[in-house]
Image 1 (cartoon, rainbow, N blue to C red):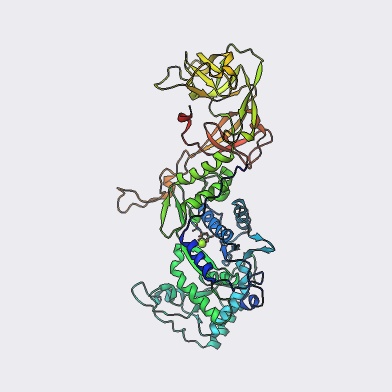
Image 2 (cartoon, protein in one colour; image 1 turned 90 degrees about the vertical axis):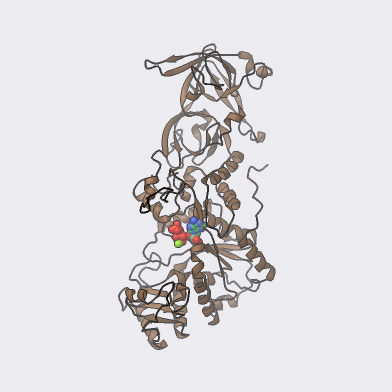
Length: 598
Ligand code: ATP
Ligand code: MG
């Protein structure tokens, strides 16, 4: 029997509808694929593409991936898997200044951790956009030759002023009608390093009066004397993102180029550019189609790289993999399950409507997965000594406990039982409040998987604080024996043997922010009030405690996750544990079901 959550039946959404319609129409059936990215000529001589569709996940390696990226990763890799396609991992590293190997490595790790693979059969579809610089340059030369691009030498200010506004058309640059020969010459000299940054730009020649400002002769190449992590000092001109991205898609034979809504206004340029290049025979038809969906926003967290960087740099959290951060490295360290991300992504679906999703929905998906997959263990988080006065000192016996109540085939383990146990401090009340069913003098309760005990009193220190609870056990009432049901009790508590328990550091996490929309204005705010998301940080988002764990947890492996009965799901920390000395992070609390169970 498998303990994996069965994949949710894929629900229809508008992107699936588009793909299914394309497949039904055979739109991409004649595409060819030479086995690697390339211009039309390379693919033309190759066999038909065995992939029915191609999608891509194109991160810029300038930061760590976050929950929003997970949505995009699972969508793109998921669609490829569902429709017999391939999904490429493409590093969009055309910007020379910001990219670092550390980010590339972390992105690779996180995508793999989510269970996605860019390798299939003999294809390894991991690409770097910077490997396409030669093609991008050659395509730009073609655009110049065909009259579709020109070198503009206006100052940045003049260019901005002449772009016009939403209500006013722009003005043609005085350089717009340079001859092809002059443009080619200037462009080559830009490449050769003859000019300073900003002296010239290459622009597409479209229409300075276009209602869509993105079509008013957008810049496609700029001069930037900067070293690139991949190409070194080979280039001092770099393509603009809006020029590079469609070309990357076309070279890789992407069929469905899925991005977030803020690129919607760029789609006309995406289509214009690829049409021109296809006319010139440079990229293969049918052209990739850009499809936009709304980005993931979640309550109580922030998902912008800029804000995440600020949280890390200003040390509001302990690094990029702090379990409170919505980065994927943070999620992994926190113990969240990749399957939980998958279930969540499937549930929230894909749409074009911006929405703020309740973080609780994410946690619910995680709990659902973990409830199914995680073995149960016992940990006492706030230990108080329980002394069973009629149980012989030095005597111990085994109690059988199931590893997973839903999966008896996962077997049982034994927990030692003896005269002195650790119980939760909250499970004893000297003067019980109404409805309290666990230990108070004169009351009987069950020690789960052990005996029924009757509370007889407690010891206190000089300040009146309870330091030990006393009880007597009822010898015939052991769980699993015929006498187990002879005494009916209403309370049920967990415990670990004090002589065997393993003390361990446990980190409990609360929301990183106190409010659902950190930094957003709130009702009643003065009109001129600007909020700073940092002011909404929860000062108590992390608590470190020492708990007493059942002995079998002593050798938990890093990243092994369990349900600690009554307390939630906990993962052995990836980095801080020593052999025999685990450290646990609480991934998520249980739903508040304890009251019902008992
Ligand atoms: P941020 O805006 O947080 O800085 P980004 O969009 O700049 O992120 P990229 O590396 O460019 O980060 O993103 C890679 C892919 O992930 C893009 O296709 C982008 O649309 C997608 N993506 C980024 N954030 C989200 C999000 N919140 N929801 C869904 N997809 C996202
Ligand atoms: Mg981006």
